[in-house]
Length: 96
Image (cartoon, rainbow, N blue to C red):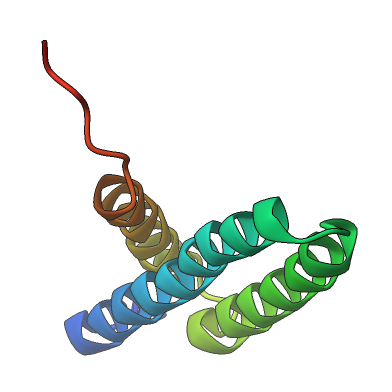
């Protein structure tokens, strides 16, 4: 009889997804800001995209161990990190 992952492994997968999301979306925010000020933005954007994607994919592979439940927990953490990064990096709105 097969059993699923325990709660600790799901929590660790969620935490790994959160860390990967913070790395990916924080790096994206940083790259866009640097790219906007650079004379040749492609030199910032392309290597950054390749690095962020490679690290994120390797992290997902390592953290999930080919288990769909840990993959789901990792994805939830990744998406939550995206939402938090978007909220933290939002430009302040100017209310009239």
